[in-house]
Length: 262
Image (tube, rainbow, N blue to C red):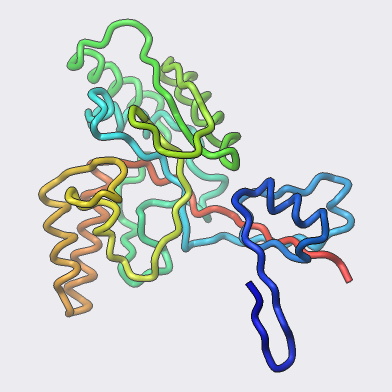
């Protein structure tokens, strides 16, 4: 795509993956790459390229649970997995607590955070195993894109260490019919409306999450014009969603920009 201005003409290229973008940069197709989810530079390239980074509060990574799966539909198991995850973010500064940006007027920082607690994780997992009559070692599948494979493997290692759950990590390019858990990257819209992602009637609600209370809040949030009331609605939405835990929100990712040196 080409943009023509009075003083400068710009050409943009779009690539289907990080690997393709990095290859295009090395081949000289572009002089700058922006908002990369990981840093592709090797030591050899570090000295030849300008690199900057920042926390992107308008996006998050999260573990999404398939609510149609007979085991993951159980909130006790989901909460055990949340408490059993040692490192949810690289640092406290970019921890994500909800699907709404911390820069938003509707953000609620006072939601349940599920800080790492091996004891709580084991107690809840034992409760789940007893109630669900699970025997033998539990095995789960975690799908993600190639860009987040390293993070997914760390999550799997944490669950195996704390809960003795065998988590098989796989790279996926599309949502499979029998998926269990997905590690995703999602860009946050400016408006806090989350109807498309979490309302039970929406095809874009990939987790198949269904809760009457959440549905009502999302509907009210769309209909309400008063900003103070709308803020209360979305703060309640975040609080109830964190309690029910159809997803573990992990972090607002650090993104990287690289450009050629003059």
